[in-house]
Structure formats: structure tokens, C-alpha cells
Length: 188
Image (cartoon, rainbow, N blue to C red):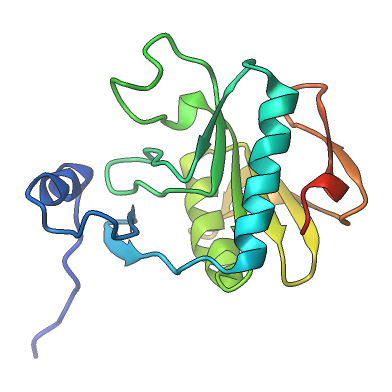
């Protein structure tokens, strides 16, 4: 009996494929647990929420941290997701030497409608396993913000011990500061 298994890629192999032009220039892909994943096109509510959120965070943070919009982060040696937004510590090299890793990350944010199941299961588990302390999921299906913190492992799977839900009219503190975000300015 032959067992068929998919080819898993390391970050080094993935970057080499990119260098060799294996992917089209505007192709939206990311490496998740060694698998190359084609990202879904964004709908209008997703784009609007992401744009409003980026604008609000930029105004609130005023250079206190770096906001990365749909840019790679490095999680282990086989994952390089591109979350909708990531807030990372300011670094002298401005991330020219490498993409942010776990030690740089203050908050990972996904905006989700058509990818809700994937963001709640696959990405949540990846972020928890990597030790990302704070994960926010803007759930555009239920029109709420899901806030996850305190990553842990239970019976081989990775989860967050704490989950809070905020409605679109709530105000919430950024988890790494006293800065308050008014969600009514973010939800479409």
C-alpha cells in the first residue's frame, strides 16, 4: 500500500520559489504549516473594515508601534501568514532585515467574512501555537469583534484560554497599551 502525503515547504524553500518567479507577481498566497495557501479575494465589507481599521490605528498609535497591512510575519520555520493587520514593535531596521517574528508582534488582526471558519480554526490554532498573545478577529458575518488571548495547548491542539466578544458600538483597549479603539468607527 502506498501512502500519499502532500509536499510540505520550509520557509527557505518557499522564499526560493518566490525568487525563481514560480508565482505570478500579484498572486495572493501565504505559507501555513508548510502548505502554500491561495488567499481568497476580499469582498467590499472586508476591504472597507480593513481600511477603516488601518486609518483608526494609524491615528491612535502615532508612531508608538508599526502597523503592517497584509504583510508577512514569520511563525516558525514553515509558516509565513499575511494577516490583514499586525501591530509590531518599532525596530531600528524598520523590518528590512527580516519580517516580524513572535517577539516583535503585539497584536494580530484578521478581518473575516468568507474565511471565518479558516480564520477561527486554522489561523487561530497557528497563532496560539506560535505564542501570539493577542489575536483579534473582526467577524463580519456576526458583526462583532472576537478577542482572543492567553494561548495554550490541550491534547495536542492549540487554543486560546480567553475569548471575549465585543459589539460594533463598543470601545476597547488595545491589549498592549491604554489606547482605546472605538469599534463604531471601524465596522462598515
